[in-house]
Length: 458
Ligand code: HEC
Ligand code: HEC
View 1 (cartoon, protein in one colour):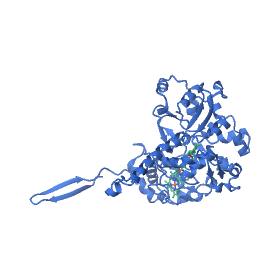
View 2 (spheres, rainbow, N blue to C red):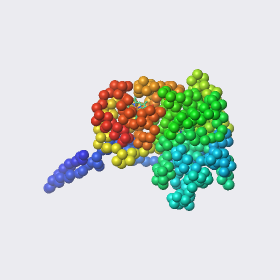
View 3 (tube, helix red, strand yellow):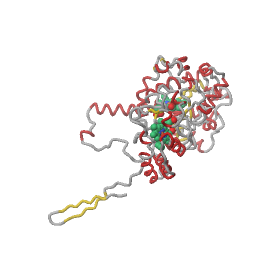
């Protein structure tokens, strides 16, 4: 709808009527101010002082460094994945000095690993396009690893194609690609959860799982069974704290890989609010990726709740040299700079979404917790399981024993694998339907449909 501003200018001799179209366009449901505007007084806009310039340079440098760390830093975790678990041997296969059949590109892609097309050397890219790369040959995977083109995985290779070790990065779980070259091959999309990635199956390729058998106190077959129970798009970041491999109704204890974008302004992170982004980065880099750093969280000393953490000493980890702590600032900064992506044009009905916003903020009560534009609560965004009408299994595994209100922007990137911490709701319709009882709301079919279009527009 256009608004017209009528300005009458009456001169000394003639009256002139100016009709000025003041509206820039219609208001789309998803559009709302998320950034401070660029207008303001000269003083508000200026940034020419020496320290202002230093701040700007620092910000630019932090983003660059943080991106490099997010994508390429293993924090020394190859000592775990390679040296201890010998995962590299399973990747290259017996023909190249490892063990077993090796990991062909076809298998790697089917396990959800992604290839960064910008890192593939032009000659290899041309061969790929022409269908001349043998996608059943692990040697082709080694060629991609040599180019550092496998997202989130770095192999330490010898010149003859044999491997010394392998390490993983944040990007393996928290980036995907846009498939612009081929399915699974394209430009990186940092922060988008890789819901194709089968972390459990990949870890289960490793010849030596002694670390897990010792920690969990089950045999090798038992560990592999647990790993294979996760399925694509999931990982259990608390298993090595509490050993709870099985959740309610026999589901695995794993959670979905969450979005790592749109996090600026959000106070608590993970489905159960373990802490801030930088808290969690230190947690993951030390206790999950098994990098070499420093981590301190006395909450993990609670023996009854975190028996394995107590055993493994996760409450107080010290490594020298510390390969993690010096990277936390830039890593944090980079993640906060990743915006939530905008849903593709045509992926939702804009008019229905606009009506759905009114439902979201009104009768459905959603915005009492999902406060726009963050879509989580500013403050302590934690809730008891019964407030949101689910069991407390996953909440109970965290220090605070609550669930955190998930920020909802960019929902379209995580349609695969379902919604809520363990993906228990297959569709947005299922999510909306389940809120009926805990929120005591009664929406008609049209309101529900509009609400779903609104969620898709976020
Ligand atoms: C093996 C897969 C995996 C790797 C590697 C990994 N993460 Fe995660 N990440 C997860 C899972 C699963 C969760 C959710 C955990 C939970 O809620 O209990 C998570 C949660 C997060 C969150 C919280 C998002 C939110 O607001 O809920 C951030 C931020 C994050 N990870 C960043 C990182 C960074 C940075 C690294 C590298 C240091 C990293 N992750 C490595 C799987 C992974
Ligand atoms: C009492 C607070 C509260 C209210 C009210 C609320 N939510 Fe939530 N919402 C949460 C919490 C907490 C989670 C995280 C649950 C989990 O991950 O298991 C969540 C998760 C979600 C998710 C899943 C996001 C994802 O990526 O998995 C969607 C979608 C959602 N809410 C939509 C809604 C809608 C629509 C309404 C209104 C009908 C609503 N919420 C009302 C607290 C609330």
